[in-house]
Amino acid sequence: SAVISQKPSRDICQRGTSLTIQCQVDSQVTMMFWYRQQPGQSLTLIATANQGSEATYESGFVIDKFPISRPNLTFSTLTVSNMSPEDSSIYLCSGCSRSGGKAFFGQGTRLTVV
Amino acid sequence: QKEVEQNSGPLSVPEGAIASLNCTYSDRVSQSFFWYRQYSGKSPELIMSIYSNGDKEDGRFTAQLNKASQYVSLLIRDSQPSDSATYLCAVNKDYGQNFVFGPGTRLSVLP
Image (tube, rainbow over all chains, first blue to last red; front, side, top):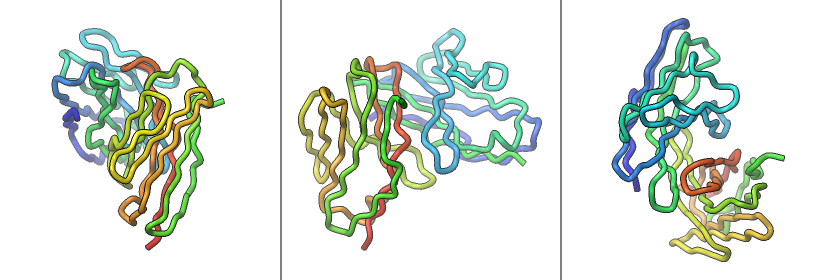
């Protein structure tokens, strides 16, 4: 299975500030994704991180709020900007492998906005 | 109609019984199918993948796929309390993009 490292694992942030989450994957991964998971809910795809170009955002998510970078194949960041308590959630980095299209997940970042 | 549907549960089974988890999907062009297990407070963990019609067994887990009926299932034999988790069905249309997750079924295995 692919190895995906994500940090920080958790953070408590003041409203109005921004947090950047980092994700490092191994070379088996071709595509990278960012998900949000609110308590008791399933995964919601935020965007696909594209290497060297703008991310592809899902409906309801915009670049100004969730800027994403992927400067190379194995690294991506998600920033949660101008945070409000409604942004409190778990954010998950995911990578999809070349073999069989399997998706693997980082450990997740538990964000609490106060 | 949602792309991937599952019963939210909770599904409760006694220890040692067979747990049966079901999933339906709407897009006929879907190519690959996965089951993930997610413990509370943890990230999803891949437990089974299946790509062709029929059954695929791995230890106590059996995945079943019926593309004509657009149906995927996961059977867990000899269920253990440690199997208590949320199980997510996922469907991938083209081996990398368009990875869609179902809402998950919460399984509780009672000692």
